[in-house]
Image 1 (cartoon, rainbow, N blue to C red):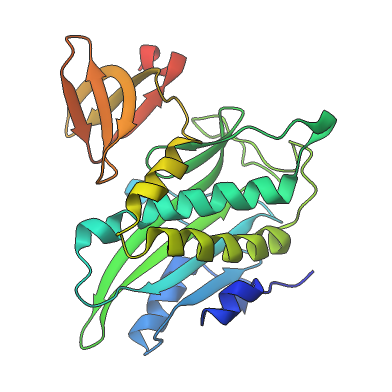
Image 2 (image 1 turned 180 degrees about the vertical axis):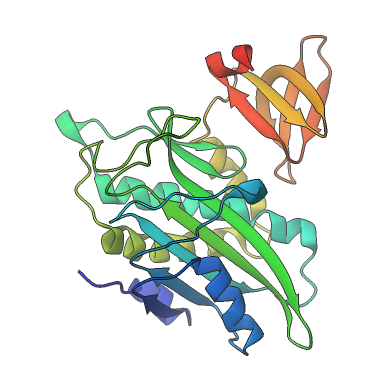
Length: 266
């Protein structure tokens, strides 16, 4: 199967660049922007040798997995805090694509895909998808965001410090091109719902409906400090709202997050 865009993405002016091998789809997308590419452009590869995750961590490649990045031109005047909420647009789009790819599952029961704040997708509590947003201003051409999406389709890397799984392990019969096509369509749905940040309340509701750990214990390491409490919600800016034991609430914009039993052990 070859990589193609969903017809809705093509109709919306999105284009596609396919590679046999790349170091990083996000790096390639930014290089294309610097060279004059206006976007929006999806960059996808059949092999990724230098993928990266949050805080400089690497993304380990397994043959048959999904690696793609969207080069998205930031409209003039769109505030940075609105741009930052694109990560939740991506999460909603990925979760919808996964549900459509896997259907009702064995025995008519759908796989339990969950969105972990701020930008992972879990299956059965194990990491399935990583999402990475990066922003760069190109002199004379404005700002661009890359939305990198790595998904364990055919297999999960081994030797990681956290649990990881794959769609194949879950019995989901989809390959990387099939997931990619669905994703390019669900991205259009979620982006239109978001409406350059004006519709973030709708994206927030959709994200919370699939959130991992909502209402349960959470611990956050941020800025050299640790906080533990209950994961109450995300606010209008996408920050994690934690209710502490004394009833106070804090809003966290970035940090290392643990939910459930892992929160108690962290």
